Picture 1: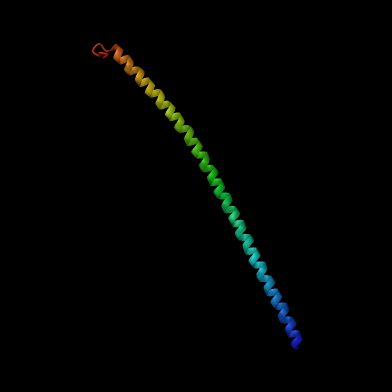
Picture 2: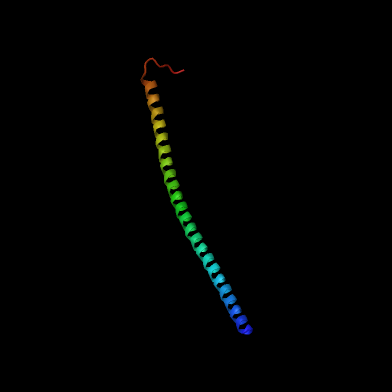
Length: 91
């Protein structure tokens, strides 16, 4: 009886250890999968942010070009006004 009890205890211990290893491995795999999903979300957000930044840069360049054209037009009009104004003297 003592030998049978010892064998049963060893089998139970091996099963418990095996189950613990299985659950620990499965938990680690779940965490890895969650981390992969989180990383994919971060990559997607980064790509979207980069796209928005690129669009903002294009818009900023367009506005800067428009501002430069307006500045040039203002200088032309100022020059025309100075040439047209009889009271304006060039020094």
